[in-house]
Length: 140
Image 1 (cartoon, rainbow, N blue to C red):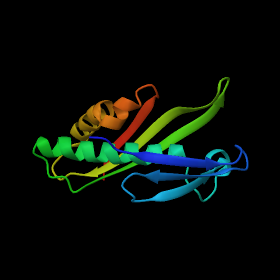
Image 2: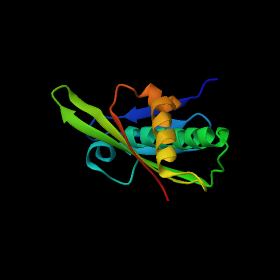
Image 3: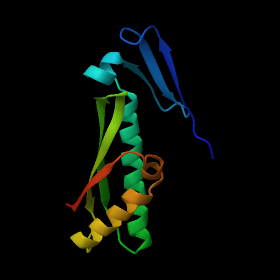
Image 4: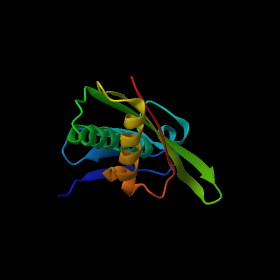
């Protein structure tokens, strides 16, 4: 299996503009220096990385719970990707996952155990292992 995404950038760093596009054609979004380092209505690579991580985590957690015989009504995850400037320039310094679940009959401790295992083992978490990842997991 291969998945594709592409980017095109025009101009210099500060005033140039770019476009991020996924291979499926589901979306193409603009990005810029301002959206990445100062904030604006456009997206940025870190935001898309967070969306991929949240999506992978939610799907993997629901799968693990289902395999264990639990009926999953909902898993909602938010990923906060922190971008900080250090001695070597900008870097992703931390990813914070916040997940909430609706799983009837499951206790909080068991939900936490499943969530921690998913944090360590979902595909995107494993790919991002060089970055500290924190988890706030709770049932609704």
